[in-house]
Amino acid sequence: KRFEEGFARFVHTPYSVSCSNGTTALHLAILALEISEGDEVIVPDLTFAASANAVIHAGADPVFVDVSPEHWTIDPAKIEAAITPKTKAIMPVHLYGHPCDMDPIMEIARKHKLFVIEDCAESIGAQYNGLATGSIGHIGCFSFFSNKVLTTGEGGMCVTADRDIAQKMQQLRDHGMSRNKRYWHEIVGYNYRITNLQAAIGVAQLEQLELFLANRRIIAKRYSEELRNIPGVGLPPEMSWAKNIYWLYAVILDEEQAGISKDALMKSLEREGIETRPFFYPLHVQPCYKGHNQESYPVTERLSRFGFNLPTSNDTTLEEITRVCEALRRII
Ligand SMILES: *Cc1c(COP(=O)(O)O)cnc(C)c1O
Image (cartoon, rainbow, N blue to C red):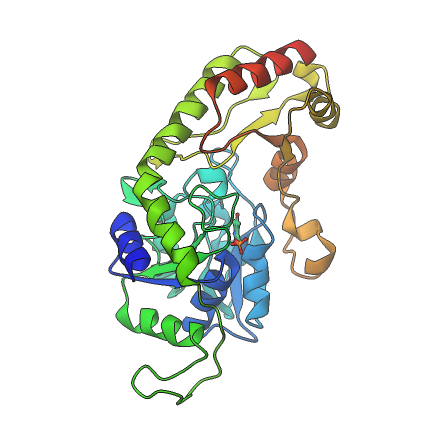
């Protein structure tokens, strides 16, 4: 209760429902909105697989939409073309800590009577026009896996302003048990609970969250200063309406300008003991989602091909950043 209440205060939402991880948070959200077989949910092509998996776990189909070249998150201008009579929801994913362009997404959702489920696994504390990600759509879903900004090892949270939806998610999380009658089950539920032990860690993490977020901004600022003059290294976006929390500091390599391929550059860095991560592969090319692709996804394909993440954590030091950037400059 303390973790849930503290979290709801942080995101400025009336209700929060804790759960076992970020994927179960998304699954609970989809189930609570009664999205099931025969329904479609719009998901960006550039995201971690769990966004699409949660839709499929509920029996529904993800429909992939390309992302924007400006901010790398779902392109609102391409959403309407993907809407069909089966569409029930849009799932914007705030990628690598940068929020989606929520106003046009909410406008499209209102016009077509769709729900909006925000995947905030990578965006705790990020803001869209001053509003916390997770507080804008019908439900916001967070992950507290060990690589996320706030962690409980494994853990998740759904936030919403709708009391009925919150109660539905609580019931689904706790074996579908009636809230008023013990051992009485009107629906088949799940065991998606977080443990008290994890929640206790979450409470302690919440006390430090502002510090974590401030560190992320300092880390990103230093990376951007040091990388600005290295040829071929494109810096991560921060739109005028956005507060990016830089879950992972992300760069796009112009291989021609840099005179080296992304793979070769990542390998050279690895030889110096510097770990980097490639961007996610487009979901539409993955074997497990065959049949879900719409048409073409040129922006996702380009970002996925040339994008990679530099070392970023709550306690990355400025010395470490300097070492990474010196290596990058030397190799390029
Ligand atoms: C981490 C992540 C998830 C899944 O969270 P888990 O806690 O690992 O289940 C979902 N979506 C995105 C975008 C993520 O980065």
